[in-house]
Length: 406
Image (cartoon, rainbow, N blue to C red; front, side, top):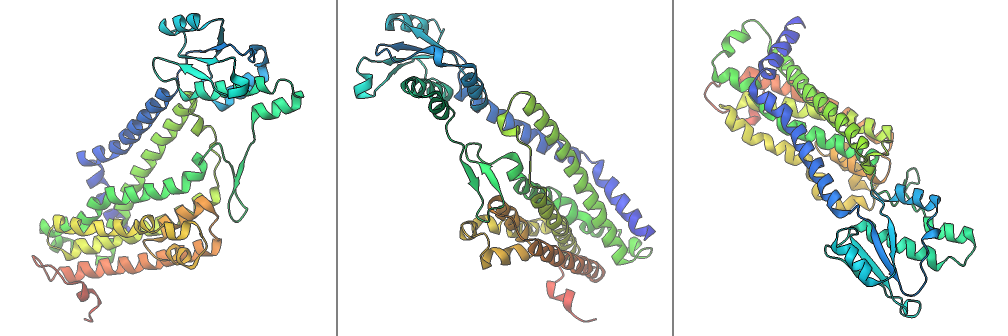
């Protein structure tokens, strides 16, 4: 056991202090920062903080109806609420528009109560918040003759609740998918991305030793199982280092996003049961693929040759993406259950199903068991491939040789 941990520590130090690891470590945070920054920029372009003007020729608008309760509701509903400014004439409104005092002005003609048409004048199209708030303002005034409770009900609208098909999850419709609801999908995608990023380390775990001709020295002091197990543990520790670093950066980004007022990050509540189920499947799934990649590294002659094969495992994990239409409408059908249990496909399938329903505990438990058993078999195959590969220096070993007797 001591030699196994020595190999793990050596493999960890050998890769962590490389320049390529630093680049890999920084690539994901920079990509996330760019994506979030670009998204915030696009969102900021959709709203304009300048006030909105209006010319009431029909005599139906009264700014006094905008009570503190209405303003509070607008603050919660819109990212950047705008002010409403009334003008006596179109000439005055046009002058304010040309001087950039307002972003647009609406004209309510005398025939509005009959024709139900409103004109809008702008130089640059106003933000989405301007259209929605003026509609709310107009609706308040039209209903001003009704009892206050009716006006309040119309002003605040209706809160629709989207309920999952099994009735165990409820989400406000207006909020869209929350951060917490998408967390299982984020976790599964993170593991897939981690698998892709660390495939080079995994594939070179044994192939480098064969290319450097140091394998003969190693096998005289350590067993194949200790060598392969130690390398897999070391590479897993490298992957966890990357993952923890990325989680820290994402947590910092969430904190900054909440400070600057990104509404999507206000609700961080999540279904921890769904998150834990995805993580429980992801860990043995990652060990399974790592062991298989190590086995391939022991069978091929060069690292480049093995890396071309490693992409197959990533594609296998993405199969649920391509056929998700077949079980998203019926997340408990036989195909969804089968894909949730099989190796390679279970991670993404369970993550997708958790968006619409709650995957039963027994399915998660069986999937974890299957993944763990397959990972143990894969580690045995990797150690056997390493032992047999010693007899095939400079030659590619056939896969069927792993199961041959002797």
